[in-house]
Every structure is written in structure tokens, then in C-alpha cells.
Length: 374
Image 1: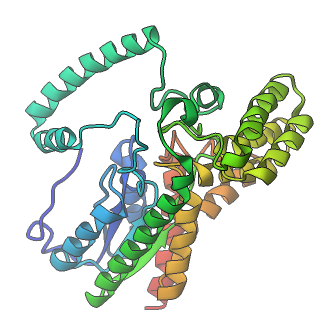
Image 2 (image 1 turned 120 degrees about the vertical axis):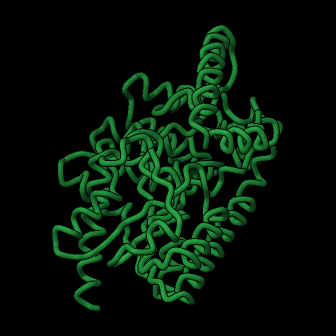
């Protein structure tokens, strides 16, 4: 449930106003509001004697490009004191490799508009629920690539490599990726500049990740980016998978590292290396390998490490505080003798209630430190 506010409805509220800006991870999907970091942060700060009101203006599925307008509206109309920017997962939501089925964005926008009516939202839910049941039945009867088929693992990605699913030249991806990263940087700078011009301070949070997210969660992944080495690299991927299945993890790592030396971009090479290291109990190294897979994944939920690095660079260049939440999640997980954010990330990218508690605690410490500094 959301409470719709206007400048008029909160005009008489006293105290420090904090607004959360981001996508579904910042919004708190899929949990009830009391289990998310927005009310937890407000409660923690009030328990320390601070007069605060924390508002969540995050929008599920929105990237920084669409959120620039949200920041401007909040600064202009809602008299915020602090903006918390928690974004970076959704920068590639509008990227779709040629040949992959695409959603009808116009139809999605119409459905989102109609969903503001609870009655119409209920009708849509019933229609979509029936449609999804039919799709699930059809998927079981048909062969082919489907998004969100396998949350963790490499089997589905191996079954449907991009080379056999998409008519697309993978060598185009690095340049495409850099364009998205550059736009993300411009959007962050625009938000910061606009907020500061309005006398509003900004703090940014990097994005934690589910390290073991399947490479093919949203898109089929290329198994080779270098045409010169395409065949040996693709062959190594399957041989390494067979070695992992046979329990020959050290041999698999050796084969994979040889292929990575030839072509470091295919995410599958790094994912299989992560699986091998994990099964050898070398969890810190496995996280690094899985993280490299996430960095190399094309499209949505790929390149998050680059987005985090870009946020840190923007923070340093503009003297804007950056809370490295990605590193803090790692530390919190490792302190329990656990890895891969399995306790802190619910699914592909959304924090669990425990993850939201960690976010609230770190923001509380930061806010209290700033209050002491005035």
C-alpha cells in the first residue's frame, strides 16, 4: 500500500525531511512496508531524539534517467533536507538485444496508469493471472529461451547461449555498455547539482548484488566476444561444465583461466569459475569470480560493479558522500561466516528484511554523524 502525498498534505510537518530515491530495491519490493528500511530509518532516528520524517519516492523499474524528474519535483515542491540516492540496478532496462522478444512499453504504461484505480487493478490482476497460467503451461510444453527461468545456476544459460538464440554481434556490447554508464554518470551529476542548488544535501548508496544470479536471468549471454577465439572458448565452457559435474573443480578452473586469457568478456567463463571455487570452499575467490560475471553480463542487472564504481567517482568529483552499501553487505554477510549475500538479497536484486535492517542502521549512523556536524 502507498500513501499519496502532496506538498499541501505535508506542509505542516516539522523536522528534517529525508526522501529516498531509487528503483524497486529502494522501494522495498516485495516486502510489507514495515519490513523495509524507510520506516526503520525513521524509527531509529526518532529513537535517538531527532525530529525526522522519511519518505520513500522510489519507483519500481525506474533507472536514473526517469528519476531525474522525480528529484527535481521533490526539490521544487516538497522542501526536502536530504536526498538518499539508491540506484544502479535499472540502468539497462530499456536495452534489448536484437532478436529477443520485447515487452510492449506503451501497453505497460497504460496498465500502470489504470492500476491507480484499485478496481481496475483487480481486473488487470485477474486477466494477467490467467494469462500467466497459460504461459507457464505453454512453456512446459515448448522448448526455447524464457526470461527469469533460472535464478541461480548456469544450466539454462548453457542451453541457450546468445549465439544460438539472437542474431546479434556481441562485439557491439562494450561500446553500448559505456554509453549507458556515461549517461548514468550524467544523471547522477544532474541530480546532485539540482539538489545543491536548492539547498538540499545528498548521500548516495552503492548497489549490493546477488553474486550467484544466473547469467541468463534476463538475456541470453554471448559465450564469446572475440571472433578469433570463438570456437575454443565456447568449447572450453562446455568442457569446464562437464569437469564441474564430475567434481574436477581444479581442472575446470585451469581450463577456464586459459579461456579467460583469450577472451575475458564472456560472463559464463567467470560464472563457472565461481562455481568451481565455491565447491572448493574458496568463497572469497568465488565471490570475486561471480562478481566478474555480473560485471560482464549484457543488459539488465549486468554491469552493476561498473555502476557502483561510477557512483564512487561522481561522489569524489562532486564531494558528495557515498555509503558503500555493496561493501557493507559483504562485511555483514562475512561476519556470519556466510557469502554471496544469500541472507541479504531476496532474489535477483531486492534486499531481504535483514538487508533492509542493515541499510537502516548504516543510514542512521551516517545521519547521526551529520547531525553532530550541523
